[in-house]
Length: 261
Image (cartoon, rainbow, N blue to C red; front, side):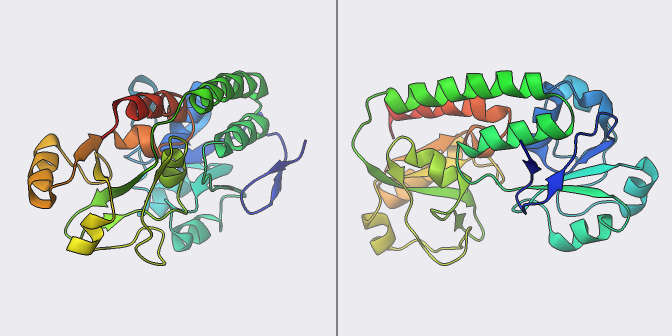
């Protein structure tokens, strides 16, 4: 099987790779595949698993990195994501990192390809296959469960300005697994919006994510009073982190479907 990243570039197995990960969810996956000793750098947002990443040097955020520090770490492979990392940063790193592995999962099933890609490149295929089997079983269980009535939910990721997600995102496709859809409020994948009577009238409720903005129950209670529709706080990691956390994310989705808004 060819090892192709999201841009269609082929990679060869690299048992001695020195990995730099700029994707928090994939840092966790790499660690769960037993590759923590080969990760030479991570972002400050790569916080799972805490006991393993604590020993891995930080190189900045997902968007702003310390180029000099990364150069000194001498990585052979860089793991990035189209949504989370900026192209100018990746282009700058490509001047001295030979292998740039680009990922772009946009649906739950894409986790299988990402896990196999990481396992194949970094020679952890057996662990990747085991994870894929567990994930596929959880997803099948979710899809076999009875679904409630379809609902339209506004999934909020930021305020000041308010921002949401489009249907062309991983989160939206996670929600689609339980029959929940998101309104399309613009051409951008993460559009800004303003509250209006028409917007509120067209949705069944609102989901406030705990990341990237740190929405709390207090935010949910205040907004519910403001708009007169159900507002629920949801775990942003469970909804948006692909890779390892997606396994727990599918279970979380099943619980969300059972509880409703």
